Image (cartoon, rainbow, N blue to C red; front, side):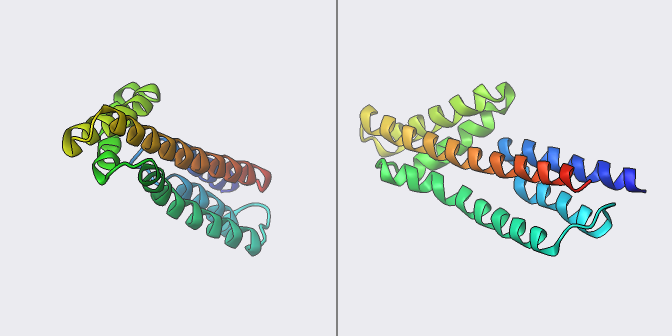
Length: 157
């Protein structure tokens, strides 16, 4: 039974890392579920404090992931169209992961801002850069947290 629990926890950690990069998968919450599995059924006792702290970190990172791209886009003068374009480009770029996702996000923000706001190419480029920086920041933060949680899972096995 311990082997099955260990495999499930590690699998949750790996899926969490993948979900931090791929849209549509809840990355860090899945990683945290791996910790929860070990807390409940793990072979070694994990302190409740660890579970709670990482749960709070996951909640904060999840909120930041939604706020940061909008904030970067807003700071660089972009509109909601740039945000939506970044998401559309990101999803379209999944086919050529990970480069396609990064370029898709950037091009989507640029093209949507250019087409819908008609403010010019320079403004659209600024918005696309802001959206891109927000995406990279959010993804990087989620990936770091998911990797640390996987490391914690391995330590508690």
